[in-house]
Length: 123
Length: 111
Image 1 (tube, each protein chain N blue to C red):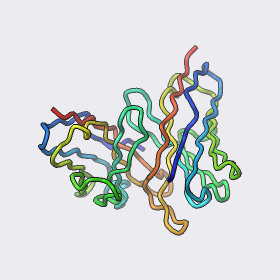
Image 2: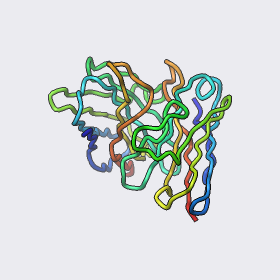
Image 3: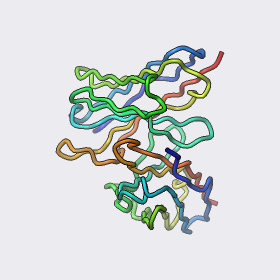
Image 4: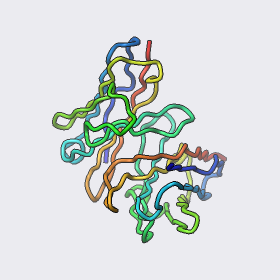
């Protein structure tokens, strides 16, 4: 069965970087895009970025450009998100999610999600 | 890109029905039939409950239904059950530049 398991909570000081992981299993890793979504306290969800595991191609939301980097390790079927220059505004729960696909084509919906990882930015 | 607008909360008694709206623009909800809805229970992985406006994934009860009119999508839950108490978020594909926008979220309470 498909599983998406995220790394644990992190506490960082302003200006630092955080690296979160998203371990997947139960399906062909390279056939499905992985996205990251943020939920800030008391706010809605915000799309952050996506990675195409087959080739490492990435797309970042404009407001995160220059601060976020997605990478993947095909040997461990894990996706990583690094977010740098953290501020208190980056506090929130970060989810990774698999985009549903068919024959390698993305279907514009997120069919499996990780449990989320709380990132707290505080001095 | 602004978030999609949802009412903060909705409530209903057991067995009743509720509808949650999700208002966007012609660049997202109104421009594509790629509206999806997600159920968030605290401490659990979010769950896809509606995709492509009105389709239900396998295993999702038919109490959940979706629709769209213009730039507003809606999620209806009929025959409310206690386990339906959760946060619900809509999402829409928004084209190759913005990619995805999400809703502000709605908390459903079962009275």
